[in-house]
Amino acid sequence: MKITTAEFIVSNSEVAKCPAEFLPEYAFIGRSNVGKSSLINMLTNHKNLAKTSGRPGKTQLINHFKINNNWFLVDLPGYGYAKVSKKTKSVFQQFITDYFETREQLVCAFVLIDIRHEAQNIDIEFMSYMGESEIPFCIIFTKADKISKTKIDSHIAAYKKQMFANNWEEMPQYFVTSSTESTGKEELLSYIDEVNQEVFKNNSQF
Image (cartoon, rainbow, N blue to C red; front, top):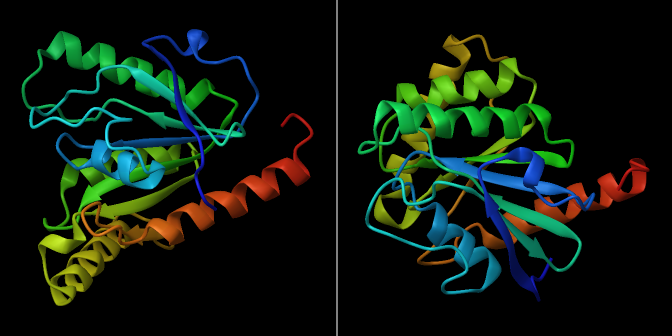
């Protein structure tokens, strides 16, 4: 798939105010400073479609971008903010939960994980929530240009081991990416394209 158009549609904190159009949605979420905005900009060929920032927790709303006029890329607030109040964090968590559990247009979520670090409990816990809630998701490992191939493999193996220890039968599909070097871009867009084709073919709502 080649992205030819990417248009910002709306930001809000209420699922009820998300676009009414019934188009497939792919939600991107991860811990603070995981490189989500850079990844979105790389995928869409836009330098500033998603706002990048050195300050963790910059994304604090549900952001919808219409891609190629036939699907939505959804940029969600992260989980595990370092510098927001508990009250603010609980509000974020509530509308993230509402989005995942009530948004009918969601066909797949992408959970972003910084490949430079070994398996983090907060990521494992969030993916366990997704699994228990039966929300389809893939993993995107980011910042692959920052470490060696050997370390990448060992960190992915550590995630597999920890997920199996948390009663997963298999690890979800995953992609290894680098926004700097466009690593994984074609694989990720091809996957979205394949899912879209299946969705439009088999689901009369879309």
